[in-house]
Amino acid sequence: MERRLGTTWILAAALALGLGLGTRAAAAPIATWDIANAPGSGASVGFTATDVTATALTAVGVTPWTFGQTGFVAAAGWAPGLVADPGKYFEFSVTVASGSGVQFNSMGLALLRGIQGANHGAQLWDLRASTDGFATSVLVQTLDISSSAADTQVIFSVDLSALGTQTGTVTFRLYGYDYTSPADYAGLGNDSGWVIFGAGVDLGIDGTVVSVVPEPASLPLVGLGLVLVAAVRRSAARA
Image (tube, rainbow, N blue to C red; front, side, top):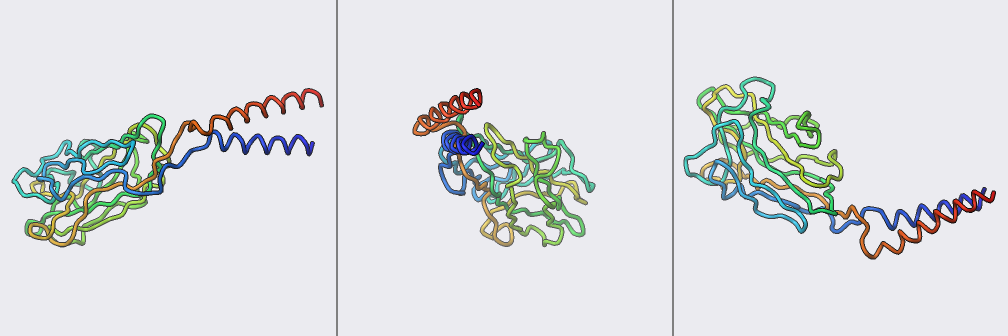
C-alpha cells in the first residue's frame, strides 16, 4: 500500500508539471482603451498584451456624446430607475489567442455625470461580463458616483478575480442608470481638467496571460506521466 501511494504521488507530480497552466507573465495591463483622446461617442483600443486582442468601446441603446470635445466617452438616455436596463450599456471585449487564457485581476476606470440644475445623468453603474450571459454584476458593490459634483471624474479599481481564468473572448458591459434628466450625459472620463473636473484614467484591464495547453518542453513529462499510469495499473493488477 505504501509503495502504491508513493508511486501515485510521483505520477501526480509528473502530470502537474506536464499539464499544468504555464504562466507567461506576471499580472500586468492586458488591454487599455484610449479615453484621453476619445471624442465622446466611443474609444479605440490603446494597448493589448501579447496574445491578446480587444474591441473598441461602443455605446449601445443610448445617445452618445457627439459635440467634438475629447477626453471622455459619455451618453444620455440611460435607465431612470434603480435597476439597469439590459438594452443600455457601454460594451468592449477582450480575446486571448488559442492555447492561452487570461487570469483576470482588476479593471481601472473613471466615471462622471453631468448635472443640470437639480437634475443629473446616470449615477449608478453595474459592470457585467459574458461569462454568465451578463446576468449578474461582477462587482461586490455598484459603482456609485451620486455624491460627486457636476462633471467630476471619480476613479474606481474593480476586482475582477471572481472571473478566474478565461479562454476565448470575454465581453464586458457597463450599465448606467438612476438619472433624473434623460438629456444629461454620463460616462467614462480621462480629461486633464479643461472640460471635466478632477483627474481621470484610461479604461484598463490587468491580468496574467497563461498557457492552457502543454508547452513543448513539458511533453516529455507528459510521456513520463503516461508511463507511470501504466506502471500503477500493472502493479494493481498483480496485487
